[in-house]
Image (cartoon, rainbow, N blue to C red; front, side, top):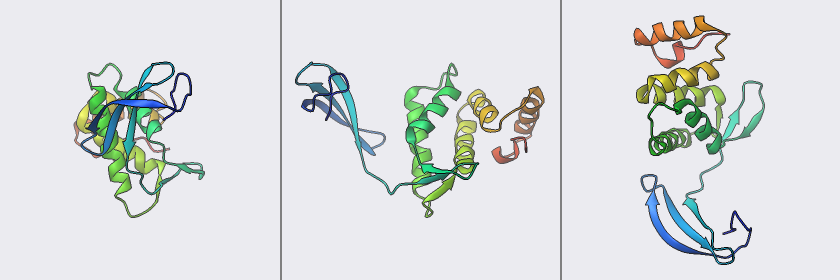
Length: 160
């Protein structure tokens, strides 16, 4: 494993443990040259998923993009990083379990909204405002009113 600090290829494993509900192995490593410690994860490689963007472009599913978006939505909400990781794992697992190997970015956004709504309303609104391309306060108010009425996430976003 290449050291992220000095790029040397030899390191030793200090500790291994199961993480992500048994879906991966977390390893603490130490570079044999510079002695820096770093963490790696080993996980099962799934069949690649292609994401179809709104403009029709296709790109490989990127777990880190999903994680970044959810982390940004959950900033200062009290949702722990561990809980965010679990949300990302659950969303990724749901995508991987589909029989189709192509999924729209809209479908991924709807999944994120479904999970965030159950987790934290503020994080949900933040994500919805970016994902739904809110144009102003009216979009926020309409979404809040729809949430109060108990409508599903797909009906909460402004159309347009």
